[in-house]
Amino acid sequence: MAKKQSIEHTSLLVLSLLSTEDMYGYQMIAELTKKFDNTFSMKEGTLYPVLKGLENDGFVEVYEEKTESGRTRKYYHLTNKGRRQLKTETETWRAYERAINSVVERAVYGAGV
Picture (cartoon, rainbow, N blue to C red):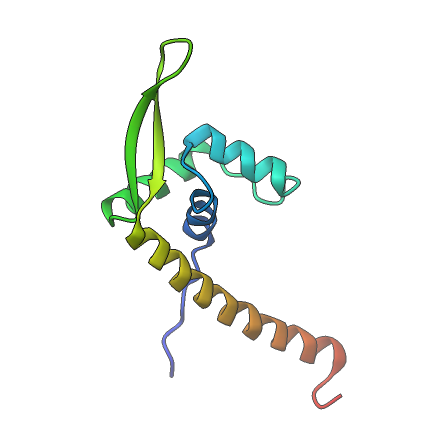
């Protein structure tokens, strides 16, 4: 029997966001909520452990910048290794998506129809 494959979508979403620009944590949460009409809402307690894991794996780098108010903000930058991981995770997600669609279409439309 084939090993069950886990699809982790939170890292895929974060890597996808960072592929367009460097962002800070709250900015990522706001972008997911705004751009996707609340379909993908993420809490800080979910996001920051994902970011830490991506950093530990070398997929993102962290740097700090001061804001106009003088506060320091952590920004996350997608590395080349992270871009390769994004491609891998996207391909895995698409294969998973095709498999789910196949099952659903058979259930809805019947086999062979």
